[in-house]
Image (tube, rainbow, N blue to C red):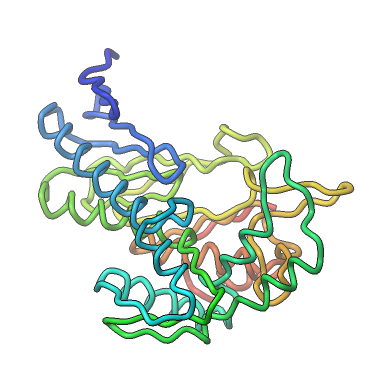
Length: 300
C-alpha cells in the first residue's frame, strides 16, 4: 500500500479499511486506526490527536525542566495554584491511592529518581532508597480545586496515569468531532475505541518472552485496554531481575510481579489503574483482578 501525506512529524498510510496514522509522543509510538477513506478527515484526526498528546506530555512530563509539573515539584513546600485539569488528575490519583491501600502513589517520584532502568543502570544503595522513601506519601498532600500543598522535597510523577489519560482525552475529542467514524487510539499499547466499529479491531498482546511478537490477539469493537509490565524497563543484578514497578512501602521493585498485565475496561484510565494495581499485588495479581470482575490477561 502506498504511503500518503508523509509530512513530518506525522505519517499517514492508506489501508484497505481506511488510514493508519503514526507519530511519537510520551516516549512511545502512537497510532490511530481510522475507519474512513477520506484522506483530509484522516489527516485532521491525526493532527488533533498528536497535538493533544503533545500538550499533555509537555504539561505533565517530569523530564521537562520548567514545565507545569516541574514548577509544582519545585515549590519547596509552598502552596501552589492549580488548574481544573490538574485537580481532576489529583482527585483520580487519590482514588487510586485509597483503592490500592497506598500502593499506587504518584508521590513516589523521589524513588523513581533513585531507581534507573537503563542498560547501564546500577543497583541503588540502601541509604539513597531510604532517603527517597522518606519523601513519599500521598496522604501528606493537601489539595482542592484551586491549590496544592506538598511537603518540601516531595515530588509527583504522573507517568502511571498520564498516557492513559491522554488516550482517553484524544478518544473523547475524536468522538466529539467525528462521531460517525470509528477509530482506534493506541499510545504505546494503551488503547481506546470510542466509537463502535462494525468489524472488531484486532489487537495483538505482546509476548513478554518474545518481544515484538503477539502472544494472543483480542477483538475489540468498543472500549479500552491498558497494559502494565516490566518487559522493557528492568535491570538485572547478580542474576536477579528488578522490574520498574516500585513498591512505595519498601522502596524496592515489587516481588513476584507478573511480566505483564493487560486489562480491558470502559476507558483507558480505569484499565490502566487496574493493570498497575495488579502489578503492585505481586503474586496475588490474578486474585486481585478476578475480584474486580474485568477481563484481563497475565503473563509470568
